[in-house]
Length: 344
Image 1 (tube, rainbow, N blue to C red):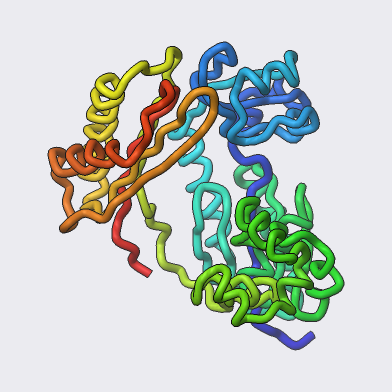
Image 2: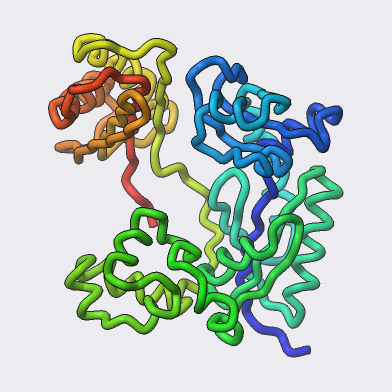
């Protein structure tokens, strides 16, 4: 069989939940929810849920209290970042043991660029070796570019393999809603639907000039290209580098006023500044997230006058952003984020 260039997207199945089940085998087959301190009576959100928990409608970002109502018998566990990082490193080392280029995207996913005549066989070998050496299950999407490989993984889950290329793109994707595309979320899909574009086919055939008028000269035409399955074909072995560092706190009792908010933002900014110092890269942009009661979230950000790792500068920027919010409701969550200059 002649060899061709392929992009594989390796995605660990229910990664965080899988790590916890591996550490606690007695939880296998039970609904497991990870988030916050693991106490569903406290204010926190779901970081991940096992497939068994998802059958009850539990999803990432959902309040733990809501998850507990939907599945009272679920096992709630606190998040353990260090454990997930350690397992992720072992998984990626395993994937790198293949004669291919590996581009890590985060804890639980990576692109693999390989020249092979049988990409399904390579995908099966990756799945088997990852399972044998780390105990983790993964799904693999196969594509002729990154976009198609990434989307293919959704059809492969859980624990499967799926190929999506130009040859079957229309048959597989054309009649799906636009948010089936990688890069188009619910909000954008809603805006596209308002323009009469509800399916991938409609978006792919849309007038690029009209899209540019409605959604901007960059994003509008890009949405159309996404719907046609266009994407990068080159996989690079550049090490994964975090684009930002952030800290946030969910308060068990709402913050009643601006003064209390400023105190907490100062604390969070200090922690972020410490993370920036450890990272060894200066921040170029600061963002603040505010979740008002009952569950309305707003974010604001600004570019710094110059890159900095200085705590005072980061704190000043975060506090200045508070003037951009309307303080008409009590606050249940605050977050501060420092973004680094992109290297790609």
